[in-house]
Image (cartoon, rainbow, N blue to C red; front, top):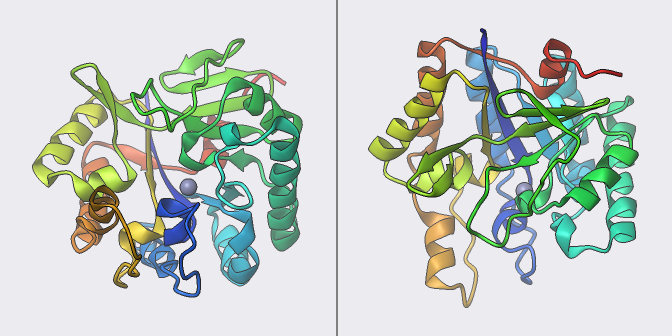
Length: 281
Ligand SMILES: [Zn+2]
């Protein structure tokens, strides 16, 4: 069986990732981390899936159109990076449609993918995603201890391929986690940046040895060369999460790509994976 890797990025700024509720200086942007990722991926002709926060789509319009033309998959990550589980269903629906229409207007065609900010979605809201015309979602994690993440039971879905859950006309792509004790540790994002490399390398290789589809997610803030903006009154925990490992993340990102290549993984976008594993219509 072929092994597929999907590099995904939540295209959001530093304040979306770490300070969605705080009143911070939004004039500073670390979105240049998107260019860093694109440059690295280009060297190996890798295309990925990019989940864009609606409220910054206009300022990225030209770039999104160019990425779309090059074969990247452009998808939706809400309007303002609010977690769907914190929104009333009707409010979620209208914000979701607003973000979808904005990105479709920029690209001039329909988009099919969605990811919930902080994976904060439940089954009721996933039904809304389906009703709004999306063909896939990538917000499912194996059970987590943190209450921040939502819970998707996916009743009526079948795991047709390990970590790929499908129902009529709709696919849920799980984000990769690896078991450590009774925890399902995420293999992407801040984890690759913050945890010791020997440990992340071991956990990632363990996962890749299974041959399951590998879904990695990163953010522009993980790769931006700019310093993290100062935020007053920040807790020590949040300080660590926003600062640790940013200097070596570019190196680690390249290393993970190298590991994937060595392990025989082929890079695809979710959009391409939908064609490889079609659902019943
Ligand atoms: Zn996000």
